[in-house]
Image (cartoon, rainbow, N blue to C red; front, side):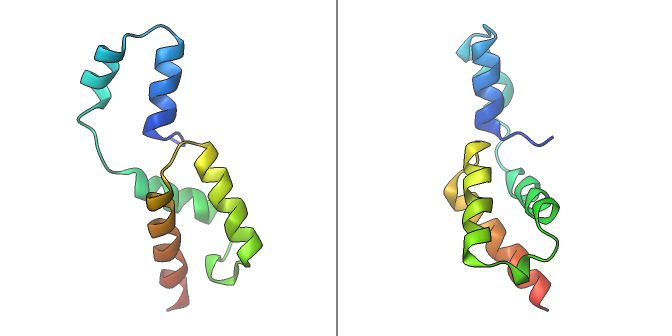
Length: 86
């Protein structure tokens, strides 16, 4: 529930699952990661609208290590911070 698609693919491949099988099972399931990213951002910091640039960089690095794309992280962080401003 807290793993990106890329992280799941890597773990399955490491356990010996063939790439074709991984692609058949996971390949068609695009999207949905932005909601997961938003939940992780809110879990890591109480009020995203109050985050400093240093805290944002830490969140970016944390989520990048989990295998999420920079674009998804950026759009999710923007959405979460603007949502809490209103």
